[in-house]
Amino acid sequence: MPFDPHFIARLIPALLVGAEVTVELAALTMAICLVWGLVVALANGVRGPLAWLAGGYIQLVRNTPLLIQLYLVYFGFSMAGFGLSGFASGLLALCAQNGGYVAEIYRGGLQSVSIRQFEAGRALGMRRWTLYTTVILPQVVARVVPPLTNQSIAIIKDTSQVAAIAVMEIMKITEVWVETSANTYDVFLGAALIYLALTSITGLVGKLAERRLAFAQ
Amino acid sequence: MNFRLLFGFALAFIAGPAWGQESLLDVVLKRDKLIVATYSTSPPLAYVDDNGKLVGFEIDMAHEIAKDLLGDPDKLELVVVQSDGRFPAALSGKIDFGLCSTTITPDRAVRIAFTRPYLDTGGSVIARKDAGIKTVKELNDPKFTYAILNVPPAIARAKQVMPEAKLLLLDSPSALFLAVKTGRAQAFAIDKPIADFYEAENQDLVRLDTSGTPFAYVSQDSIYMKPGDFKWWLFLDTWVGELRSGIRYEKYVEWYRKWLKKDPPPQRFYDYNKY
Image (cartoon, rainbow over all chains, first blue to last red; front, side):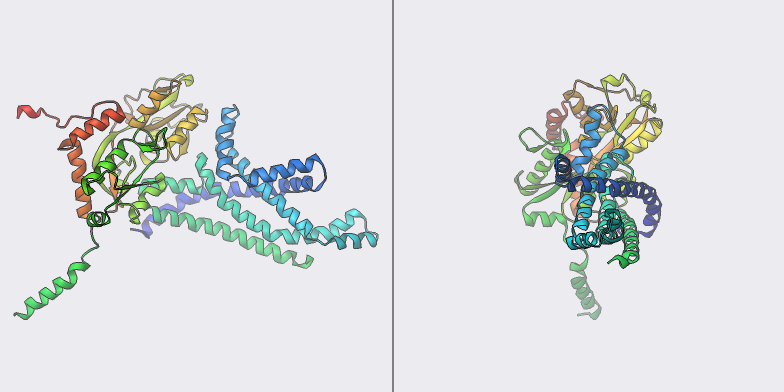
């Protein structure tokens, strides 16, 4: 029967082992994407072939399913003779896809600052560096925090797809427990609760960051 | 009339319909269609053939059950499930029963009802020829990666026989096959009938010798359903019993030869003509 408390008590510690892998994977993905997304956004901002490259990359990764990217990296690279581990393949695919999204978030943030502020800064004789660090970027950072929080939550949920390439994160352990016990409801419920806890914490951190940066608005 | 008797009748009348829900057997007959969960990636039991049709040993079984129940093998809806969706499909009542190469395990029997088994299976291990090994025991080496389904018998055997090898847990036979074909893993374990199929179809793969290991033991595949419906379970269990050792044995022989390319276990373990 569903809601067997003894069963759930045995289940949770097993899922928490997977949660460690999920957190590692999601945190690394987010950290890498913050930098990689900026590189892509900047490349996309300049005119010329670099922008085409960045634009093409964003289109490619954003418009194909993560699961297919995972399979391509995991099985495809292996066929080509340089197989990455499941974790590394998962990290690569997650970063590739989410890097595209984060780049778009940065672009949105930059474009949201009125062109008049650039003109006003220059009219006041501010140097480019000062203009960016004291006027433009504080506003951009404050504006990209909410969508970045969203993206972090999406990443945490996306990590569940990495189960398909044999990474022992929450979802994989969930599958093993479902197979073993046939107690699907309790196992999925337990997994959902752990994901909910992880995403709620992320959301909370995002909210705190937002409040901290509110002065810039 | 005796008041107590009257009360008894009244109680029987009220309690009667409340005893339990209608059996699925009656529901299926009334609906005039049977709904069965199957796999689509586990040849030769249930897979999609070159024409895009779902075929296999288990698919033939499902059609035959529909024929026995409703007089027409095509009064059947096949619902393709993944391994983690097969039990909730039954428990939630979306399907009437499942025919998904499902091994009976005591853990599962706590929450799911099984008929008697329709197929003996066991683990078989298939390796790439270029791995240069012949026995399962040789696979117990950290330099080898070994792909298995994330199911309890496979995990238990792997931990017992090859604790040194790296494990790769995947969720379908075709993913295991892909892992070995692409070189992600050097070997994979799968139910014997499926292994027979892959071995016959692929020259670059080889069956490993499993003698003297738990792989040599038999496990049993069975039809599963939501527990608690005696009438429905009894029908299906009787059906499987007749298939394996009774009046439908002829069909069993036919399907065994067609899909597994060999004869099934005998109808009786003794010589019937002698007694």
